[in-house]
Amino acid sequence: MAHSLGMRISRINPRNTSALAFGGSGKVERNPKKDLATFSTGKVYHTDLSASYNIGARYFIRAFQKSISETKWLSLQAKVPKLAKRTSQTLSSFISLHHAFELPKEA
Image (tube, rainbow, N blue to C red; front, top):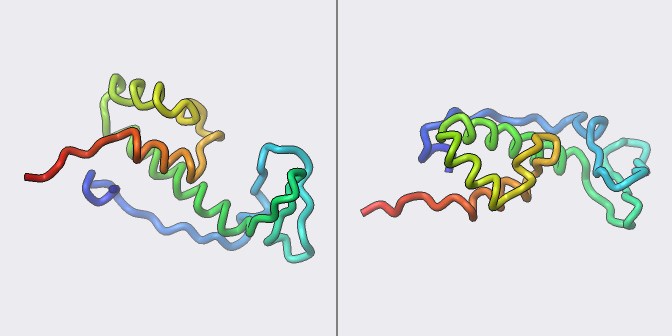
């Protein structure tokens, strides 16, 4: 999607991003390597990968926002409320944005 919109692509290095990862769901227990997090729900995530996906998604969402009009952005925000607050944006926000934004079909 980024290439079709003429956006620059950046690589994300996930190493050590787990130190910054937070699920927003309360206390998170980490293993000694700090790469796995157990949330209060009992779910276990590989935080380096999850964090890098979310960082990449936030970067893309910001670049995408800059490439469209404010009116279009507000209409997408109405469809995907998590877009309103940058810290709430995750990979799932990006996927929802992708579904909410219909690229014109090429003839």
